[in-house]
Image (cartoon, rainbow, N blue to C red; front, side, top):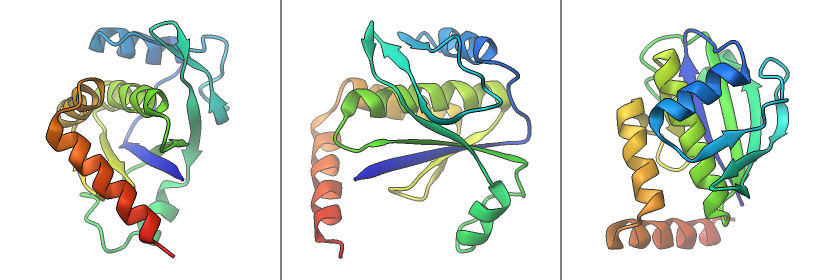
Length: 156
């Protein structure tokens, strides 16, 4: 099953180099594919986490459609942009790479992050805590991950 998160913001970064600088500022051992075009992202974005391939899919999603489709959520305001991240839920390295890249993007654009698991909006500071939890899972985190997996298996 795939997992998703979105960065909602009112401005965009201009290049992969600018995004990489934001990742570096966070202190993450994540290297984005430098030859990729940020403006044309529409699928797999190769990344390297600690030297190992750990990419994710990345898309410029239609923010208005996301807001309409989730009318029950309080988005705070009508955001201008939504950058979507998707990966296989069973791939921890891909999850970590997506959360790192999303956190850095959110901080650099003063955006917020939401994921498809808890429908909660997080600031970049709160998202950095998710990154730490994925990197160094606590017993509580592992229990929550197992519970989410169990719930997904029960879905029709």
